[in-house]
Length: 250
Image 1: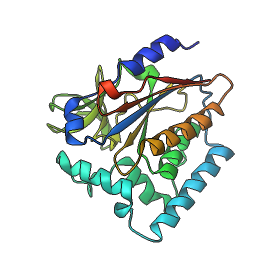
Image 2 (image 1 turned 90 degrees about the horizontal axis):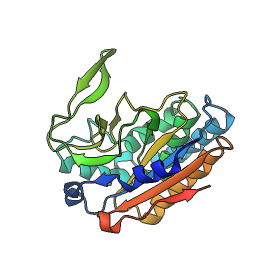
Image 3 (image 1 turned 90 degrees about the vertical axis):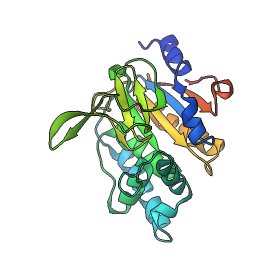
């Protein structure tokens, strides 16, 4: 049985550093924890949701380039602000949107779900396995010494972010580089994951209502993944004093 007090404490202690807000004062993060998930491979429901996302992205790209879509364009500007080249390291939303017309990956029901919601709502979403997570999430600008576990040339390696790069971290190191570009191997969702942390990122012109709608859609689909699923979230806006308290979905 999940310890919901511990989950609430994890969300309450999550931090977005002040210098990240200095970089983009319009940034907001919706952190959502789901527990009691029944793991499953891709099924008819997750495949259908992915097909909806593929169709939506195909329609959008029929009338314009991915980099011109409003939220993708905003994330490109944010990447340039901390020295990243968005044409070389695309944010997760842009990477999925560009891939959608040719077919999104089918990984497992949980990963399929958040990838589809990301494309449908045009919001970057990352997913972490809470059983492999250490401490609370922190979004900060890197010193360059933080370890990041990844794979290069089919080998597991430790890399380090660039100085000033915006990264999500836990107590053991970087869990996602360049804000929402690449997730680390250590905390990645797996086929047997039953507890997950999802991070939904927003910049203007995406509104708080847009972000909350994406979170509620994600929560609704997560609740369909088993009778014991419980979902809790927290919205961080601008500074700790403006952060919304966590909400719990039964």
